[in-house]
Length: 169
Image (tube, one colour):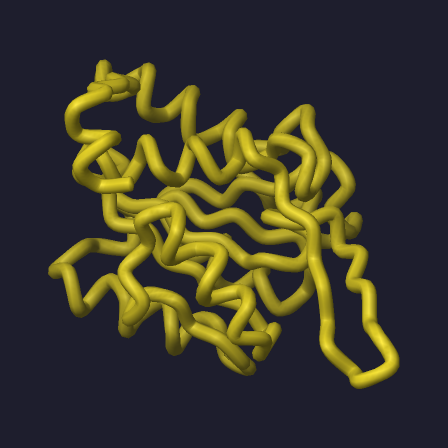
């Protein structure tokens, strides 16, 4: 049974586009419905990790507002499997209990280690070939919401409690 969700950022939580201003600051756009699915997961007791090669502190800020523990946001990850293993050890999880979302080559080893590997519809061909699930939605456009909602509904845990929501967010 899936007890945790983990995902890459660029190409999964975003469409992969990165804007850069003259000072070198990077900007990403996120789908609000994906963010709400992450909130639903954290409100209903799932652990969530962000494992990304991106280094911007804005990534950390974005996912803290969705209920992700700051210690479970791994920025600048160059070996995602190491960070994935750190995450599952921290919570005493088995890799088979985690659904991992990835879209590009650095995600393959984690997708293969996880219980369920999910790819957005626009992932690179090598990732699409090894994914257990390919979302009908592209990265940054509902991929996270799609698979998280389906998994939580299958477990009877897609429950919105406004009281918990108001208290946590």
